[in-house]
Length: 479
Image 1: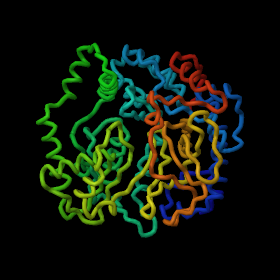
Image 2: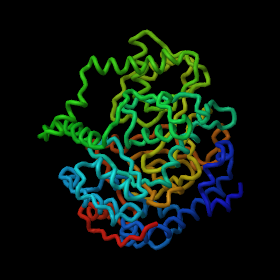
Image 3: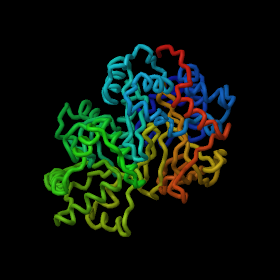
């Protein structure tokens, strides 16, 4: 495919098989990425209030190089920069004004005055606008709300397809024919978290609506109110604080705190569906390493092992999710999964803010970024962009070239090491990351990670403060 043609429609990248994506000349890819980065900036600066305010604050009116991402990327915390009191008090008119600052869609006609909780508010946004907001699990104590909309939703599913698409003779499975079941140990089957939205789209596009082909730990809907309360409650528990619960929160806590015997029963049922009933069959499992480890422990307890077809795939990654792994945990996984470990494992790295994912190769275990994502690395303490050559270690910044209704530049909280010179023996062209990505906050004694904007050190703090206090005007026009 002519890369010049991708400038007008970068979504064509999604139509290319993985084998072609990673064989593109990286110098040409980087040139295309920079041109699209500049184009997105000029398209969205006047449509997204938060971007306009940040650009004005740091004095940026054009994109000259990838280094500008260190100045104009949003802090990853911006999606939870709302005033928590507005959420807890049900002031969803103010939440709407906050969300307007992050999207190019016009929310001025959304009346949220009668919304009784966050789920009703998000339903109202989806009813009255093209927005289809996603949410995080809130492991930090506060959920993030992402301004995705109808045009962006298929992009996340396309990323999953690319993640499982083979490069040359690497191990892979194609679930698009709707014949291979897919499993995850998530404790719900429907809701707004990213993995559940992906499963919903899979059911609609690949499985003809069949719910038995997308299997989760629990067959239930999980509300955002529940996720939000869980985040707040677990943070208080972690800090040794006592929460004064409202009657609704007390009810939520009672629903969440399942007795041990019921939890054990859920896991037994899940292991029956995943391991016992799938003997000899091809499956796909998607989940974080902690879930893989929990499955291994469950299998050891029951004295069973997976006996799937050897073309099955276990797609894992996602960091520790706050879980402290004991010594020897990988050995437990290797023992239980036997011939499937590591041959059938496909690691990946992604962020909820973007579809700019990375795929782990089998040859050396390196993470290779998909070409519609710009990656950059900055000094974790100063925000200074590091050279795009040699091996560099610092904070990961990402820009997703595909979305066009929100600003997809994100300064993450992850520390990474990248080899800009490439040369991985798997054959993929372009730079690669070492597969040891971790949270920068985990490396600090105070467990805090203070994001610094390279353009102005306090620009991020000022931006989030203005958003929380609704000091950013919109003046929006519908996209």
